[in-house]
Length: 202
Image 1 (spheres, rainbow, N blue to C red):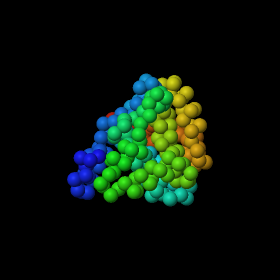
Image 2 (cartoon, rainbow, N blue to C red):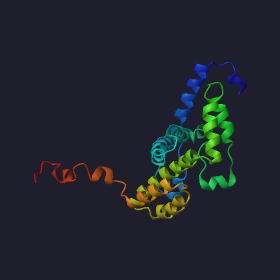
Image 3 (cartoon, rainbow, N blue to C red):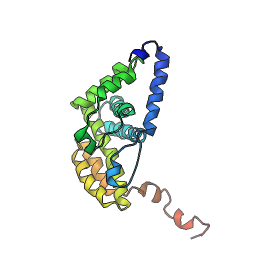
Image 4 (cartoon, rainbow, N blue to C red):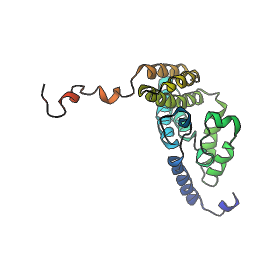
């Protein structure tokens, strides 16, 4: 990273922001095999952070640390791209090195690399919750694809649910499987609105 040595901290922070923006254009690649569904890494990271926040509240864990681990868990993919489960058999990415390069000169390296190391070691409750949040976001997507008729999503769901580590994650995973993905908007707050929406009265 010799070319970055002469860039000031604020410039490197702006570089970092631009790099984070690349995640909007970095596709999650597993859906190629599923045959339906799509998302980018930024979309995945956002909901993973929301789920991690909620899981930490449920478990009485450190909410901020869990959420931050989720927020940055796939940051390296701005440089490496997303390796799906098949690609992982044949390819390895230098994820930690990518994060070191991304944060060098920003003053953010100690925090972000610390979250990354904790997440990779998966020894703390917060790291386990963050790992579960990652899986739960995937489980939610698979359930949506299953609800819309992709039978293979059901097979994938079984494997994804088995990867959930904590009791709180497992409780949420079971509830995801029992909940139609559209219920949140179709059933409320006024279910009858769908029948009245063209001016039809009761």
